[in-house]
Amino acid sequence: SQQGEEDPQALSIQEGENATMNCSYKTSINNLQWYRQNSGRGLVHLILIRSNEREKHSGRLRVTLDTSKKSSSLLITASRAADTASYFCAAGGTSYGKLTFGQGTILTVHP
Amino acid sequence: ETGVTQTPRHLVMGMTNKKSLKCEQHLGHNAMYWYKQSAKKPLELMFVYNFKEQTENNSVPSRFSPECPNSSHLFLHLHTLQPEDSALYLCASSQQTGLAQETQYFGPGTRLLVL
Image 1 (cartoon, rainbow over the protein chains, first blue to last red):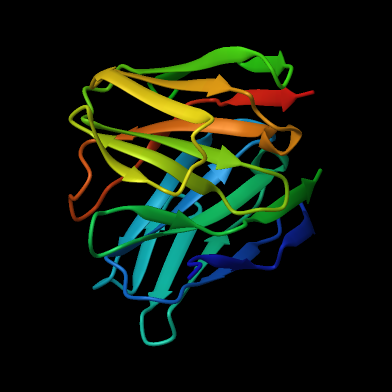
Image 2: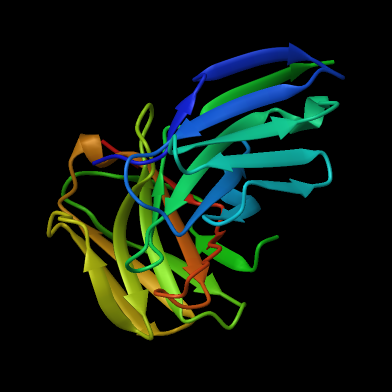
């Protein structure tokens, strides 16, 4: 079964606004990770939240995790044009630490 | 730079060609991964190697043949590919599979076009 489905598929905002992306997953997880991908490039790890954590911050990023709803959200505050990229959540399984990625949210930040 | 390099960055090949993709990590990691990224599809895990041993083959067709001679290098040998194999192939590494919290470090990918 597929884990890590993102919502929305695409998000377009103005610089300075906040961007919120949501992720849902299906089975038990050890952790939930968020990655960023610039067009046609590799993925870059942003933040990891463990299954026993509810919220985590890193700079302008805020991640929440609700294991009862099997969902997570990524908030980027005060967005910049340079934040334009695709954002993926990845569910870290309990068995091998293997990651299962969602389809991603394409974020466009207009200057 | 993530410490993971991939060559070539772009590759065009015919269906009868044989080519290889190379990945090298400079992070001292013990696990390496091949992923396939196609348009409008989630990232698909293809193979996982842990301490040079293959631990995962995600039902990948035999026209894709991985090789891991040591923990720093990973190859993907390609032969008689199909046009639907055109995609971005991403290599990643992590400290070790099976650890509770694993962050993966990705290379820039090889953009493959099969004609």
